[in-house]
Length: 220
Length: 200
Image (cartoon, rainbow over all chains, first blue to last red; front, side, top):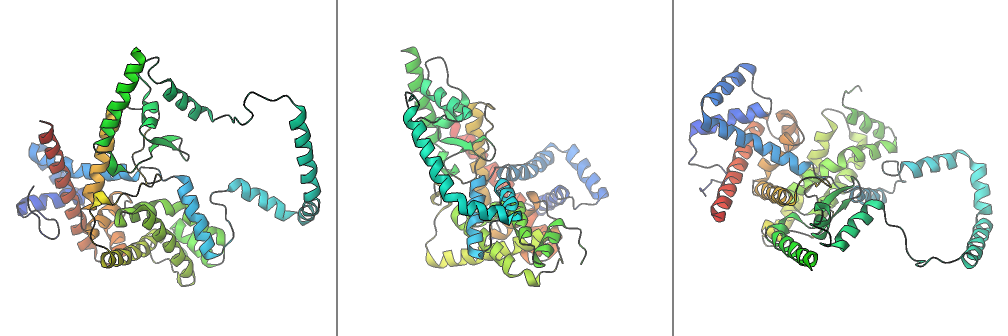
C-alpha cells in the first residue's frame, strides 16, 4: 500500500493522473461542460487503462449509494420521533400513526360523543370483561390456549429452519435467518441483525457449520 | 416569501405555527440525515441523539428561519456542526478506537438489504463483505472529504449546496469531492488486490 499525505493524496500519482481523476469526478457530478465531457469520453475510449480508472471512480458512487439504500427500520425512526416530541413537549403528530390520528380527529370533532364515552367508559368495560369471563368458562378449550398464530411469512420461515435438512438444502431465507438476519418490519425484507463489521470470518464459519449439521441430519 | 423548495414551504408553515409541518419534515428528512450522521460519528446511538438534537435546533430557530437556500442544506449544516462538536468532545474524553472496535451490536443498525427469495447465499455473503469494505474505506477518509463525497454521491447535491453545508467555497468542494472519490477508489482497489493475494 502506498504512503499518503495528510489529505489522503497519494504522492506517487502524477499530476497528469490527478488532473484526469479531477475531470472524471467533475463529469460524474455533472459539473463538466459538454465539450470537455466529449473530449474526456474520447480519451477514455482510446485508452483501456484510463477506462479502468474511470470505471473505478464511477464504482465509488455506486458503492456509496448501496450503503444509502439500506432501509432504516421504521420503529427506529418512530422511537426517535417520540423522543423528539417528548423533548419538545409537543403533541403526537401524524407522521407514523395515520390511523390513530384519524380516530383522534373524529373524536375531537364530536365533543358530545367524547363526553358520553368518558362517562360510560367504566360500566361498558366492566360489562365487556364479565362477558369475556363467562365465554372463557363456557366455551370448549383448544389444545394450547396460550398459542397465538404467527404471521404467515415468519411461521413459514421458522418451520423451514425447524425442518432443517430433513428434505433437502434449506432455503436461502431460512439460512439467512439462522445466521442472524431478521425481517425489517418496514419493508418485509430480510435485514441483518448483527453489525456489519462482525461478519468477516465468523459468518463463513457459522454458515459451514450450519450446512454441515443439516446435511448430516438429512442423511441420517 | 415565495420558494420553489417544498421543504422550505413546510418550514415556513411551521414558522407560522403549523406544528404538523415539522412532523412532515421529520418524515422526509430524518432517514437521510441519520445516514449522513452515522457516517460522520460512526456510532448509531450517537447519530440518533444528534439527529434529534438537529430537529430540536430547527424547532428553536423557526422564528429566525428564512428560505435563503434549500431547507435540507440548512438541516445538514446544523447536523454536521453538531456532529463536529461531538467528535471534538469524543476526542478529548476517550483514547482513539479503531473502526473495528466501534460496533455496537445495535440490531437496527443499517446493513445490507436482502430481498427474500433473491440471490444465493454465496452472493449474499460476498455482497455483505463488499458493503463492509466500502463502509470501512469511507470511514478512513478525512471528515470533510467524507461529508463532501456523501452529499454529492448520495444526496445528489451540487457543489454550491455542499459548500453551503460545509461552510466553504464551491472550488474547494470540487477539490474535496474529487480527492475523496480518488482516495476511495484507491483504497477499494488496494483492498481488492490484497484479498485476491490472500486467496492465492
